[in-house]
Image (tube, rainbow, N blue to C red; front, side):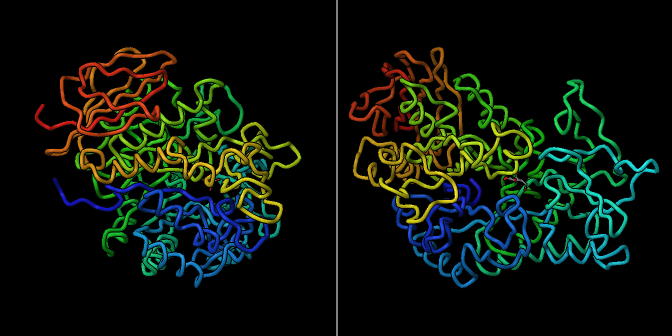
Length: 532
Ligand code: GLC
């Protein structure tokens, strides 16, 4: 087996900085708050933290509109505070991964301010400016992901600029080598400061058709962004060259990583972003974000991504993030919801690949219903309240009482109505809690080579059960996940069980693997001998 790296063997935990811990009573989380909560992360047993954007931002898209890539947003702290957080995280064996937003800046970024100052600006061609068509209509038919056309008319300079998201998020022009160089320097700025790597925002958007041709329309006839086939504004073949360039920068440093957001569900497309080991270290596999609660679907999606991956490349696993409803809500059920959250955790932490946890999932946080007049997310405002993302971004629930241990002021988003019962403090000393299950799974994963680096092989199983084997040399583990609301008997060979865990707390492990009884929505992880 080739040399193993921390980001392959390890587990990443995503923090949405506005919502993790408020240390200065302004209702918004900050870096000092994260520092104060590092012991939780060390106790849990994760290896790296991915911070959603922390750079100065007018917050039109809550940090994904960056006004200065090489500094820290004052709401969150400053560079010295960042260094302190990073040092203290490293002392606990935790690396920091930053969010790098290469497709667009804020319209308040000095580059864009300069660019929009006039047609002869030296930074004019850092962004995508075009004349309207002779009839005065926009330069092409591209649409913003966040609703409406993708072009904004600038009266002062008499041209329009491209914005794939909000008009406050103008797209950089990656065809300009100066832009590429400047963005590579941003990577170096943070790599020099010691970060472990980057989560890369909407990487499938950075290369566009050089002629900016119209996208063909979709057969669906759907209006707006969803009604187009994105052949000219997404996933352009030239992306591969930009990915190689990014990789060369990372290769200037030891053992750093990138994970790219490729918001395209086709596994072959996502896998192409690894560029056979010369591009991204990981491309997010988002198939699980859309998967219904079904053993067959999870098995099929796992195997489709495995099959699409170039040789030697490593998969990843995601159930929740800041853009989609939390999986404990997606898979909730009045009777089986809690049990399902335990099965989901077991699947995420035992399949082959680097798992990405989303803050709060370890205590089973649910999406929070946001009253219409409190919606802040631009997607909720511009597209539809029902698809707004505030509900998955609410404050971390640390303890009961007002502010849930997150803040002693009114928090920027409402706190979950279940925070008095569902919080870290209440679960930490309860061995039957979801939090303790996450901790147990993380510990088992860390100490069992089959789980953090082994091969994957699917096993025959009864209906609604997803069973698989993980194996690395002498280390071997069998996993059975019961997705059904009924009991299941599973036969997984005739091995003697040496250890492991099951998600119904307090039930003993079976002695052998030839007759495993799984309760409704129960999972079992069984460590067995390699040679059985
Ligand atoms: C990515 C981010 C999302 C953001 C968008 C625009 O999809 O995950 O939160 O709104 O990019 O930057």
